[in-house]
Length: 341
Image (cartoon, rainbow, N blue to C red; front, side, top):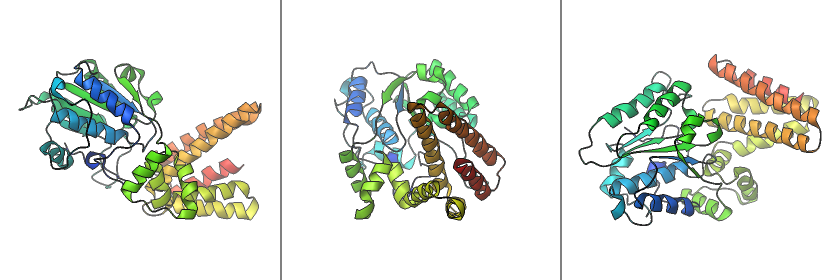
């Protein structure tokens, strides 16, 4: 029942061990009041962009609930977890019998994190709830994120949500709740978190000790869009340089443009480039969507349709490449060629 976070970003603090949360005081206060009232929902959908503290909030709330299993005796606010408290130590070490953290598992053959949370992972939740708690405490499942559930896994979770065991709680995290099964969303209480405000970003990055050159700080924070995860990818994974090369490629033509395409492809297909590749794919999707939206707003419906269709074609192309393990460098070159036509 380990809560170790596979694929933790360099420079990040594992949410289970993070004792500080910035920018979400209202959401935390709502959870504390709801729990203390004794009328809290058994499944909470914590939604919002990636890297803004959803998992940290979930683990803080789980720590609070497990430390105060009787709602009426719980404090009115959620305090920073005490690392030396038995509950905190059990959660951090994965030794708690009252919490199950469902996330994408690591493939034992390749050592890489799998692309989805499978039904085999969800079956662990069934086993988890079938065990009798020696303390009579809550049983909490954190799904991190539910966006990664494949179809069979999502249906399996749905069955548990429909008939939850006594003193069971689900904290369902989602970066894109619109992609979840409507039936899963309908059985959860939504709690929306927003991008971190500048002050909260400064506090969060200060806690991590992230070093951003003074001359690049403003640009990095603008590109981070209130997400600590994006800031880490921009600084620690070469994301800022990749996005700069992408903009230069779009502005160039002929041999210069081709040179920039190869520079990007080399950066995204090298060893240990999974995070950078995922970051760029996300940025590319945003770029195409924003371009289509901008063209539609200016009345260029033909151009908007072109970029909307291009986004769909590229998503399919990337999916096929991943499924058949096609050469990543060539795939990236093909994608960039399609964008620049």
